[in-house]
Structures are given as structure tokens and as C-alpha cells.
Amino acid sequence: MVTQPRFFVLLPVVLLAIPLALLPLPSAAGAVVACAAVLLALIDPIWAVYAAILSVPVQDLVTLPGGISVTQAALLLAVGALALHTLIDPERPLPLGRLFPPLALLLLALGAATVFTPYSRADALRETLRWSTVPLIYLLTLRSLRPTPTSVRVELPADRVILSEQITRGPQAPAPWHLLGLLACLLLAPAIDAALGLAQFWYGIGPPSFGIGGGYMRSYGTIGQPNSFAGYMNQSWPLALSLTVGALIWLRRSAPRRVGLIALASAGGAAGLLLLALLTSFSRGGWVGAVGGAVAMILATIPLLAPRLRRIAWRATALAVGGLALMLALGGGGMLPDSLTSRLGSITANLRIFDVRGVMITPENFAVVERMAHIQAGWNMLVRHPLTGVGPGNFSAAFNQTPGPGDPPITTRPWYVSRGHAHNYYLNMAAEAGVIGAAAYVLLIGAVGLQAARAIRFARGILWRAVAVGCAGVVVAVAIHNIFENLHVLNMGLQLGTVWALLVAAEKPV
Image 1 (cartoon, one colour):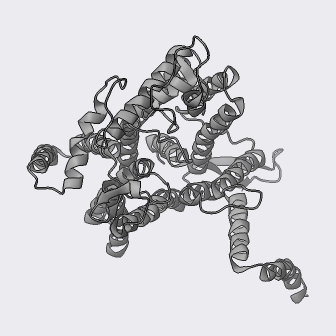
Image 2 (cartoon, rainbow, N blue to C red):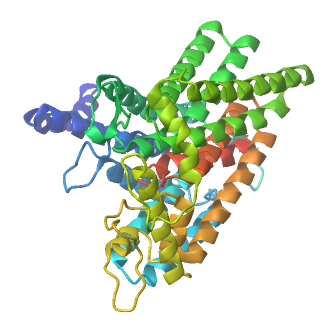
């Protein structure tokens, strides 16, 4: 009688193991990982969030049956997990947080731009669906981190009319591994990509256009472009650095020595990798965004310190600013590597506005002139379609189209091949979704900034305060970097949407 249940338990395992054994090793391993991910997501939706975040660096490396990417499969798993767990527990409200209304408003604006686009409606719908993954991961993360009520059954005497009732004891915090696992995924995925980027830089692996002299290459990881790669780093290093400081404080106060050292080494190692990879990307916009993120973290941290430490922090900040000015001065005097000096010196050139018509193009100014040509094209799109733009994802279609008789050209000679965006995401959103879409996007970024301020103010405990400060640094770094690039590409919005959800959760940690 004992062996019979065991037989029925082992029978499905054996039936599954036989076809797996006949598959090639990579296919069998992929099938096992996929089955494990599905089962874990059925148990707890946080596993779908983990899978989506970890899939970002490998989304273009692995193609699953049917031609879908790993990230697309993870998103389908996330949708299924969110729907299933909502149906299983219908009495538990789906947490929306303060950021869901501006997210929904942006999706509505993109939907309107999709309907009225004069170009490809399929491309517009595809871009709108890509944006919809951000509120999806945001909602799923909030649901996974939101405390749930616990109930205890109390038996009453038999002579009472009501025999028993459910008494709620109050909120129960999610298991600590939910948050710790989420933070680990947010750092692990970009850290692995950062290690690959450092190897590309050191060994000179990459196309000739990424070369920076001396046999070195700009880091680009699996993202494919150094500037987008730098944006991926900016979405993660502030959180890693803030957690490093939090682990150091925890270690000095009350943490078990071994656990505290492991936490400090893990977060510190990730922060070092991410910052080095950001430096070797040689992305000027990424560097400027990183400086903005660092300043935001400093300004957010200093008021939390004791008065004596606050004075020390302000002095250290002044010394850091002086050191940065000295570094720039030394770079001008030839004390820094020429490749680094030239990139630092050209930052101001990327901020200068000029008319590309009639500019003599040289190898030295090619990148700056090309960037400005795309900015002017984006402005021309906005002028021609001011309300709803040319449609989400239709920047290249409008850029490459030959103007009709009597229509003013969108592009300027000889720039007839689009890079896909306006090299400024705020203008890019205005060009693709018009004034309505640009206003909705700015409203969203403003709401995220206010939520970051609230999270820093109300977060309790070392861990949640470190999370709030780090996520605020990510928000500012990405917002500034988007002045030079489009970081809402390649499903990196999954990382960013999770960071936004953490800011909402940090405001009222349990």
C-alpha cells in the first residue's frame, strides 16, 4: 500500500524523462528550464518577474520554437501568472499604486497615435504593445511584493449558532526572499552583461566602428550598441551602489559578520562591474546620466544622516566636485588617455543646437552632425503632425519616406538613412505620438520623480531605504540619459518598470 502512491508519483516523471532523454542536450536543458519556470510561476508569480528580468540580456541570443524570443516567452508567462493568480484569489485587490494612472494615460496616448498614424499601423501597434510590458511587469511586481492578510480559524463553542469564523490578524509581509531575489535578478542580469562588455573592451572584440584606438573596443555586451548598453548599466549601477552602502551600514550595526560580508561583496562587486562597463562603453550620454544619478543619490542620502555625519558628507561632496573639475582640467592638459579626453571634451558639442544644412561633414564632426540631423527630422515630424505624431515606431518610416509634391522634406541632405530614433527620447516621443504623447510621457516621468521622493521620505529600515535611494538614482540617470538616446528599446523597460514598482513598494514597506 505504501509503494502504490509512490508509483503514481514517479510515473509522470518517468514519462517525461523518456522524451527528454531523446532530445539533444541543449533542447533538453531548455525544456527542463521552461518547465521549471512554468511550475514556479504557477506557485508564485514572483518567479515570472525573475524570468522576465533575467531574459533581457539573452533575448537576441536564443530563439524558441515558433520564432519567439526568450523575453517574449517570459512575458507570456508573466501574463498567464498575473491572470491565474488574480482568478485564484479574486477577493485580493490588484495593487495599482500611484504610477499606474500615468502609465495608463501614456498607453492611451500611444493608442490614439496608433489609430491616426499616416504610416504603418502594424509598427505602431507593435511599439504600443512593447510599451504595455512596462505596466504589466509593474503590476506583477507590486502584486508579488504586496503583503497579504493571514487568517486563523477559531473554533467557537458548539452551543453557539455560528460554529466558526475567520479572524484576520493583519497584514503579513511577503517572504524576504521575494525582495532579495528581485534585487539579485536586477543586479545579476546587467552584471553578467557588464562582464561580457569588459571582455569586449579589453580584447578588442567588436565591429571596427566601435574601436577607440590602442586595440580597444567600446563595450556593448549583448545589447548590440554601446549607447544602449550604457543605458542598461544606468538602470542598475545606482541600485547596486546604494545596496553596497546599505550592506556596509548593516554590517557595522548588527548584521552577522559572514552574512554581512557576503552581502557587501555581492553588491559591491556588482557595482564595480557595472560602473566599469559604463565607463568602457564610452557613451557620453551615459556618462552625463550617471553623473546626474550620482548627484541625485547624494542629495537623497545626506538629509537621512545624523547632523555630524551630514556635515562630513557635504564636505566630501564638495571634494568630489573639486576632484571632478580637476580631472577635467587634467584631461585638457593631456594627463588622461586621449580617447577618454576626446569623449569628455565632445560632451558639450552634443548639447549644442545648430542647423545641419550647409555644414561641412568631416570624420571629427560626423557623429555630432548626424545626431543633430535626426533631432531636426524629429522636430519636422512634430511640426507636420503636431497632435498625434507619425505614430509609435514609425520614426524610420517617416524619416526614409520621400516627400510628396509640395511637401517640405523631413530630412536634410545627405541624411537619408534613419538610426531609428531622434537621439532624444523626449523629442522622439513628441515626433511619434505628438504633443499628447509627449505630455503624457513627461507627466509619467514627473510622477515617477515624485514617487521617488516619497519613497525616500517614508522608507523604513536599512534595506528599503537603500532600495529607495538606489531606484531614485536609476530614475534620474535614465531621465538625463534619455536626452541623448532612446533607452526604451530591447525590452529594457522590464528592468525600469520593476524599479518603478519598487519605489511604490518602498513607500509603505512592512
